[in-house]
Image (cartoon, rainbow, N blue to C red; front, side, top):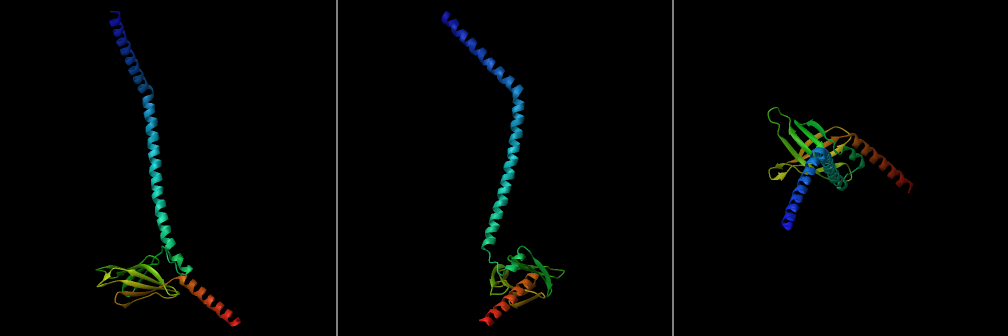
Length: 198
């Protein structure tokens, strides 16, 4: 029976050890569990907020990099006109409202009270010639062709005309053109003086 009693004692000791461990777990939960949960949840919440902020900043940085890549590959033309980047000029001409956003797009909107149909005349395509003329292509459909626009930067009055069907010829008056004209005038005068000296 000594062996049987020993087996019963082991089982008694095992039950006591199990109760002791459960009691410690309850004591731990009551004493430290709430504190641990509070600390863990608040730290977890703080880390989640930091992660969300970091993800938002990463998205912003990716957009900035994409924009810089676009700007890096852009044909800027005469330096004076770079100041017009991300700026738009709107003018009423010939019964229409024209919006020119150099380096981006040109739009035309009917100025009437009843219908105000809007047309995209094109997106910036390239600079043309040595002067200050911007070409815009790929505008809204105009029959079997796409609308296009030629925008001449000038130090003077604004003008607009449709020189050919669906080809719009606009003159944008801007101080940047005055600067470019002044630079061109001075360069021509300098070149004439250099040529006279030779």
